Length: 262
Image 1 (cartoon, rainbow, N blue to C red):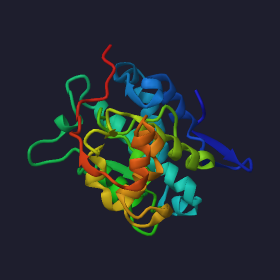
Image 2: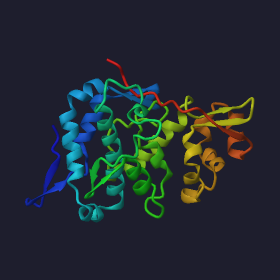
Image 3: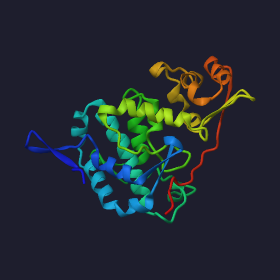
Image 4: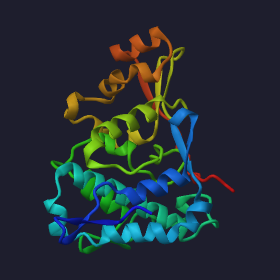
Protein backbone atom coordinates (compact mmCIF):
# COMPACT_ATOMS: atom_id res chain seq x y z
CA UNK A 1 0.00 0.00 0.00
CA UNK A 2 1.36 3.49 -0.82
CA UNK A 3 2.61 5.49 2.16
CA UNK A 4 0.30 8.10 3.63
CA UNK A 5 3.23 10.28 4.62
CA UNK A 6 6.79 10.65 3.44
CA UNK A 7 9.90 12.00 5.12
CA UNK A 8 10.90 15.57 4.37
CA UNK A 9 14.68 16.17 4.42
CA UNK A 10 15.01 12.97 6.43
CA UNK A 11 13.45 14.53 9.52
CA UNK A 12 9.73 15.18 9.96
CA UNK A 13 6.86 13.47 8.20
CA UNK A 14 5.25 15.62 5.50
CA UNK A 15 1.88 15.34 3.82
CA UNK A 16 1.88 13.23 0.66
CA UNK A 17 0.74 15.59 -2.09
CA UNK A 18 0.62 12.71 -4.56
CA UNK A 19 -2.44 11.40 -2.67
CA UNK A 20 -1.17 7.96 -3.71
CA UNK A 21 -3.31 6.02 -1.23
CA UNK A 22 -6.49 7.66 -2.50
CA UNK A 23 -5.51 7.06 -6.12
CA UNK A 24 -4.93 3.40 -5.34
CA UNK A 25 -8.40 3.11 -3.80
CA UNK A 26 -10.08 4.92 -6.67
CA UNK A 27 -8.33 2.87 -9.34
CA UNK A 28 -9.52 -0.33 -7.68
CA UNK A 29 -13.11 0.65 -6.93
CA UNK A 30 -14.20 3.18 -9.59
CA UNK A 31 -15.62 1.75 -12.82
CA UNK A 32 -15.57 3.91 -15.95
CA UNK A 33 -18.65 4.00 -18.17
CA UNK A 34 -19.33 5.24 -21.72
CA UNK A 35 -15.65 5.55 -22.69
CA UNK A 36 -14.84 7.48 -19.54
CA UNK A 37 -17.71 9.99 -19.63
CA UNK A 38 -19.20 8.65 -16.41
CA UNK A 39 -18.31 6.32 -13.56
CA UNK A 40 -19.78 4.20 -10.83
CA UNK A 41 -18.32 2.95 -7.56
CA UNK A 42 -18.03 -0.59 -6.28
CA UNK A 43 -19.13 0.39 -2.79
CA UNK A 44 -19.34 -3.26 -1.80
CA UNK A 45 -15.64 -3.84 -2.43
CA UNK A 46 -14.71 -0.37 -1.16
CA UNK A 47 -16.34 -1.32 2.15
CA UNK A 48 -13.73 -4.05 2.51
CA UNK A 49 -11.04 -1.36 2.10
CA UNK A 50 -12.74 1.04 4.49
CA UNK A 51 -9.87 0.98 6.97
CA UNK A 52 -7.52 2.20 4.22
CA UNK A 53 -9.97 4.95 3.26
CA UNK A 54 -10.25 5.98 6.90
CA UNK A 55 -6.46 6.09 7.24
CA UNK A 56 -6.26 8.37 4.18
CA UNK A 57 -8.98 10.64 5.54
CA UNK A 58 -7.16 10.77 8.87
CA UNK A 59 -4.07 11.98 7.02
CA UNK A 60 -6.16 14.84 5.64
CA UNK A 61 -7.58 15.60 9.07
CA UNK A 62 -4.07 15.71 10.55
CA UNK A 63 -3.12 18.70 8.37
CA UNK A 64 -3.29 21.87 10.45
CA UNK A 65 -4.64 25.14 9.14
CA UNK A 66 -1.13 26.61 9.27
CA UNK A 67 0.29 23.72 7.27
CA UNK A 68 -2.54 24.01 4.74
CA UNK A 69 -1.92 27.74 4.33
CA UNK A 70 1.72 26.95 3.52
CA UNK A 71 0.64 24.70 0.63
CA UNK A 72 0.74 26.11 -2.89
CA UNK A 73 -2.60 27.12 -4.40
CA UNK A 74 -2.80 24.00 -6.61
CA UNK A 75 -1.94 21.82 -3.60
CA UNK A 76 -4.75 23.40 -1.59
CA UNK A 77 -7.26 22.98 -4.39
CA UNK A 78 -6.36 19.32 -4.93
CA UNK A 79 -6.44 18.70 -1.17
CA UNK A 80 -9.96 20.10 -0.82
CA UNK A 81 -11.38 18.31 -3.87
CA UNK A 82 -9.97 15.00 -2.65
CA UNK A 83 -11.28 15.71 0.84
CA UNK A 84 -14.79 16.32 -0.50
CA UNK A 85 -14.75 13.16 -2.59
CA UNK A 86 -13.12 11.01 0.06
CA UNK A 87 -15.42 12.04 2.90
CA UNK A 88 -18.43 11.60 0.61
CA UNK A 89 -17.37 7.98 0.02
CA UNK A 90 -17.03 7.49 3.78
CA UNK A 91 -20.49 9.01 4.32
CA UNK A 92 -22.04 6.53 1.90
CA UNK A 93 -20.27 3.62 3.58
CA UNK A 94 -21.79 4.55 6.96
CA UNK A 95 -25.17 3.24 5.73
CA UNK A 96 -24.28 1.10 2.72
CA UNK A 97 -25.87 -1.11 1.39
CA UNK A 98 -29.12 0.15 2.94
CA UNK A 99 -29.56 3.23 0.78
CA UNK A 100 -30.37 4.05 -2.82
CA UNK A 101 -29.39 7.72 -2.76
CA UNK A 102 -27.19 10.03 -0.74
CA UNK A 103 -30.41 11.87 0.03
CA UNK A 104 -31.49 8.86 2.10
CA UNK A 105 -28.93 10.08 4.64
CA UNK A 106 -30.95 13.24 5.17
CA UNK A 107 -34.64 13.92 5.69
CA UNK A 108 -37.32 16.38 4.64
CA UNK A 109 -35.85 18.93 7.05
CA UNK A 110 -32.15 18.02 6.97
CA UNK A 111 -29.54 17.75 4.23
CA UNK A 112 -26.73 15.16 4.18
CA UNK A 113 -24.38 17.96 3.10
CA UNK A 114 -24.89 20.23 6.11
CA UNK A 115 -23.89 18.30 9.28
CA UNK A 116 -20.45 19.32 10.56
CA UNK A 117 -18.90 15.90 11.11
CA UNK A 118 -15.67 16.17 9.12
CA UNK A 119 -12.47 16.98 11.07
CA UNK A 120 -10.54 19.26 8.75
CA UNK A 121 -8.05 22.09 9.26
CA UNK A 122 -8.58 22.16 13.01
CA UNK A 123 -12.38 22.36 12.92
CA UNK A 124 -15.47 20.26 12.26
CA UNK A 125 -16.86 21.10 8.84
CA UNK A 126 -19.59 19.89 6.52
CA UNK A 127 -19.41 18.78 2.90
CA UNK A 128 -21.15 22.06 2.06
CA UNK A 129 -18.41 23.94 3.90
CA UNK A 130 -15.73 22.27 1.79
CA UNK A 131 -17.51 22.90 -1.49
CA UNK A 132 -19.12 26.29 -0.99
CA UNK A 133 -17.11 28.05 1.73
CA UNK A 134 -13.70 26.81 0.62
CA UNK A 135 -13.58 25.66 -3.00
CA UNK A 136 -16.14 28.17 -4.30
CA UNK A 137 -15.14 31.07 -2.06
CA UNK A 138 -14.85 34.19 -4.19
CA UNK A 139 -11.38 35.50 -4.77
CA UNK A 140 -9.61 32.22 -3.99
CA UNK A 141 -9.73 29.62 -6.78
CA UNK A 142 -12.52 31.14 -8.89
CA UNK A 143 -12.60 28.02 -11.05
CA UNK A 144 -16.05 26.80 -12.16
CA UNK A 145 -14.50 23.52 -13.28
CA UNK A 146 -14.62 22.44 -9.64
CA UNK A 147 -18.23 21.46 -10.33
CA UNK A 148 -16.92 18.72 -12.63
CA UNK A 149 -14.47 17.47 -10.00
CA UNK A 150 -16.47 17.11 -6.77
CA UNK A 151 -18.76 14.10 -6.75
CA UNK A 152 -21.98 13.82 -4.73
CA UNK A 153 -22.31 10.02 -5.13
CA UNK A 154 -25.16 10.40 -7.61
CA UNK A 155 -25.76 9.32 -11.21
CA UNK A 156 -26.58 12.88 -12.25
CA UNK A 157 -23.35 14.26 -10.78
CA UNK A 158 -20.16 14.64 -12.81
CA UNK A 159 -18.20 11.42 -12.54
CA UNK A 160 -15.96 10.48 -9.65
CA UNK A 161 -12.50 10.53 -11.19
CA UNK A 162 -10.58 7.26 -11.16
CA UNK A 163 -7.58 8.91 -9.55
CA UNK A 164 -6.88 11.59 -6.98
CA UNK A 165 -6.37 15.20 -8.01
CA UNK A 166 -2.76 16.30 -7.68
CA UNK A 167 -1.23 19.76 -7.80
CA UNK A 168 1.22 18.93 -10.57
CA UNK A 169 -1.56 17.99 -12.99
CA UNK A 170 -4.67 19.61 -11.60
CA UNK A 171 -5.31 21.96 -14.53
CA UNK A 172 -5.15 19.08 -17.02
CA UNK A 173 -7.31 16.92 -14.74
CA UNK A 174 -9.96 19.62 -14.44
CA UNK A 175 -9.95 20.10 -18.21
CA UNK A 176 -10.43 16.38 -18.76
CA UNK A 177 -13.27 16.29 -16.23
CA UNK A 178 -14.93 19.15 -18.10
CA UNK A 179 -14.56 17.37 -21.44
CA UNK A 180 -15.93 14.14 -20.04
CA UNK A 181 -18.96 15.83 -18.52
CA UNK A 182 -19.79 18.06 -21.47
CA UNK A 183 -19.47 15.09 -23.85
CA UNK A 184 -21.99 13.00 -21.94
CA UNK A 185 -25.30 13.22 -23.80
CA UNK A 186 -27.20 11.95 -20.76
CA UNK A 187 -26.25 15.17 -18.93
CA UNK A 188 -25.74 17.76 -21.69
CA UNK A 189 -27.04 17.73 -25.27
CA UNK A 190 -28.20 19.98 -28.09
CA UNK A 191 -31.66 19.48 -29.57
CA UNK A 192 -31.06 20.79 -33.07
CA UNK A 193 -34.67 20.47 -34.22
CA UNK A 194 -35.84 22.65 -31.36
CA UNK A 195 -32.77 24.87 -31.22
CA UNK A 196 -32.47 24.15 -27.51
CA UNK A 197 -29.41 23.34 -25.44
CA UNK A 198 -30.35 20.94 -22.66
CA UNK A 199 -27.88 21.23 -19.81
CA UNK A 200 -27.34 19.54 -16.49
CA UNK A 201 -29.19 21.10 -13.58
CA UNK A 202 -25.74 21.98 -12.20
CA UNK A 203 -25.70 24.93 -14.61
CA UNK A 204 -29.01 26.11 -13.16
CA UNK A 205 -27.90 25.79 -9.54
CA UNK A 206 -24.42 27.26 -10.04
CA UNK A 207 -24.85 29.27 -13.21
CA UNK A 208 -23.31 32.39 -11.68
CA UNK A 209 -20.00 30.55 -11.36
CA UNK A 210 -19.96 30.31 -15.16
CA UNK A 211 -20.95 33.94 -15.74
CA UNK A 212 -18.31 35.93 -13.90
CA UNK A 213 -15.86 36.57 -16.68
CA UNK A 214 -13.25 34.19 -15.25
CA UNK A 215 -11.32 32.25 -17.88
CA UNK A 216 -12.88 34.42 -20.60
CA UNK A 217 -16.43 33.25 -19.86
CA UNK A 218 -19.24 35.76 -19.35
CA UNK A 219 -22.38 33.62 -19.78
CA UNK A 220 -23.62 30.06 -20.06
CA UNK A 221 -23.92 30.65 -23.80
CA UNK A 222 -20.24 31.61 -23.93
CA UNK A 223 -19.30 28.55 -21.90
CA UNK A 224 -21.33 26.34 -24.24
CA UNK A 225 -19.72 27.97 -27.28
CA UNK A 226 -16.30 26.95 -25.96
CA UNK A 227 -17.51 23.34 -25.88
CA UNK A 228 -19.63 23.25 -29.03
CA UNK A 229 -17.68 20.33 -30.48
CA UNK A 230 -18.62 18.25 -27.43
CA UNK A 231 -22.30 19.17 -27.34
CA UNK A 232 -23.31 18.33 -30.90
CA UNK A 233 -22.23 15.86 -33.58
CA UNK A 234 -23.72 18.04 -36.29
CA UNK A 235 -21.70 20.82 -38.00
CA UNK A 236 -24.82 22.97 -38.16
CA UNK A 237 -25.56 22.31 -34.50
CA UNK A 238 -22.03 23.26 -33.52
CA UNK A 239 -22.25 26.45 -35.58
CA UNK A 240 -25.51 27.36 -33.87
CA UNK A 241 -24.03 26.78 -30.42
CA UNK A 242 -20.99 28.91 -31.26
CA UNK A 243 -23.24 31.72 -32.49
CA UNK A 244 -25.31 31.69 -29.29
CA UNK A 245 -28.57 31.27 -31.23
CA UNK A 246 -30.29 28.81 -28.91
CA UNK A 247 -32.48 28.56 -25.84
CA UNK A 248 -31.35 26.78 -22.67
CA UNK A 249 -33.31 24.32 -20.56
CA UNK A 250 -32.16 22.17 -17.66
CA UNK A 251 -32.51 18.41 -17.38
CA UNK A 252 -33.82 16.54 -14.37
CA UNK A 253 -31.13 15.43 -11.93
CA UNK A 254 -30.77 11.74 -11.12
CA UNK A 255 -30.02 11.37 -7.41
CA UNK A 256 -29.71 7.57 -7.59
CA UNK A 257 -26.56 6.23 -5.93
CA UNK A 258 -23.66 5.81 -8.37
CA UNK A 259 -23.26 2.23 -7.23
CA UNK A 260 -22.10 -0.91 -9.01
CA UNK A 261 -24.24 -3.51 -7.26
CA UNK A 262 -22.34 -6.72 -6.65
